[in-house]
Length: 470
Image (cartoon, rainbow, N blue to C red; front, side, top):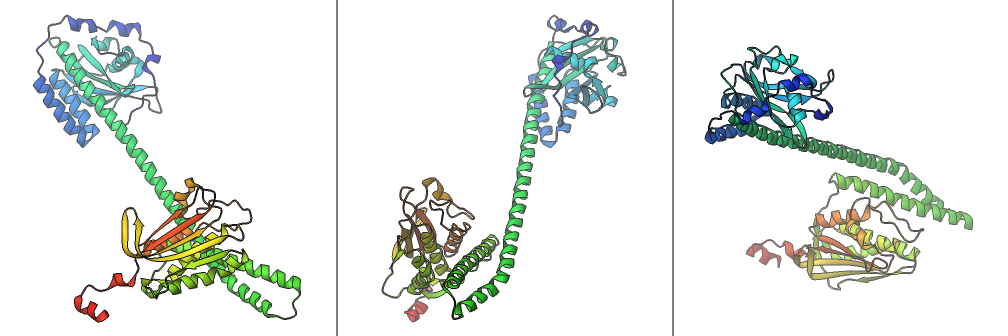
């Protein structure tokens, strides 16, 4: 139901001729019939049912029931509107009785019974209103009396409900006023609910559209990232090969060797950034594959250590590794778990001052899995450093994609904020958890990965097969 309450009724005065039509005070002295609360209750129940169908159905029924309860020849609902081509007006939105042919016609605010009623701000009774209001001259038979009650919605006027008598023997009384006021109160409450529902639906639609726009923008972003990564990788391979060939040439001067070393190091950094971009696109589309197979814990640890050792040496870090001596068989993707450890160790190397101590510990056995879950048989990796640390308020976001928390060292290569997001993704693909702690926010960080990937967890639960396996 559309309505416009931008025009203030009090801005328009009441004409003297209009005041001559008012006889509201007579309602108090007229004999009144006894109230019929039972009939009124039935009407309100039917109106509530009609409201569940539509606003229009409810208003149509409201006009019909107002005419019946008040024994009126006509009844209607006038809605305050401001059409584009005319000043503030009332639209006859629902009609019953003799006025029915005038449905959806307009009456100007300053020449209408409703305008006077809303300006007065209370119910009003009019005598022979057609003598004073040219806007209702078309109503036939002639109107003897008209009783109107404002319908407030929220903090402003919405319109009025009214009944008209076309017979000298039919006069309105206090009971008619009470019934019409009850119907007006119901209508106001119903329209307020409708207004709030319409507003809620509008905001929900806006939120849904915004979310869809955000989703499309995010999709385009990841498509761009994937395309950029592939485009950058194409010329990268020949560039790396060319640098390798130059490195093998003899009789290179010290300056050339130094320049070549810088170029190779920066090319390695560029390669890592491109792989990060591609990993981000793969994660977004769920295309990072995890292929579970039998593997050895020691192989995963030492492959990771060998991969990061050049970075550790370049920064003069001391890397300590603690791993069980006995063979530990896992059911996991060895390459992906190696990637997890490489990312964690690389982060520690990058965000620790030169010459720092970094520790990698692998533990097997009973381990907490987070959120109250405990893994009775699991492998736990913990990477600890005494680096720059992470502010406590930033800790909840470190595993989010593209999160960059900054560094206290201006020379640190901060990357793209993808490594830890990939770590969480790969760990969760293995059914595990990852957590991070950082001292007091100023020094030192520890990342712990817990994975239920021990091979004995995957033994088939058949006594015969289990016996064969043993």
